[in-house]
Image (cartoon, rainbow, N blue to C red):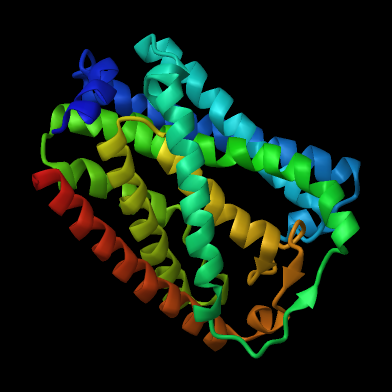
Length: 293
């Protein structure tokens, strides 16, 4: 392990009990599912949002509600980590703060440039339609960005923070403590609504993204870069062009042909898998070469 990552996992060194970690995760899952389901049910009835009950978030308010559930995710998880491990959020995201914010900023810029430049790789028939007017989009964007920051932070704190730290304490194999959280991360993004093959393709793409984020965390010793890349990725998918109807409420544009044509979406997911794999491989080879110089 490098020095940065060794310092990153220090807060987890005192926890050797696998059952405590398992209990923390199980209780988090139970409380999060119950509280978030109740929250969505109450709000959907309060505002008469039938779409949410069908799993559709096609208006800004509906996406706000979805993203707000990650505040429940993060709050419940931090309470349990404090209760069972006597640890706070700083121990999960890494120190020092200046490095965290520097890595976060660099990652957003670099990932943003990459995502913008690879949009042309996604197959389409040029039927990209305006979903929100520019003025409307600018109005709903600030709250959406604020809530999405908590969404990506919640996921990174769990997968690249807590899980990666704890697995690295127990088993020193780098690929083990990077790969297992990434696979779980990918499986949690499974969506079988358009078929098993597309669902598994999305799991594969998301798992590779998770592996990339895990490696960034390993090299930098904090979650700054991982949160930054994750933020840029989600911003592109949720706020610029939406290829999935389920979460299109805050998108500037939508590609409706992808909603109705599973084969087209499969081709897009396949292109994403190939390009993501190639980019990760190039990144990894370069970073390993630099580390061994």
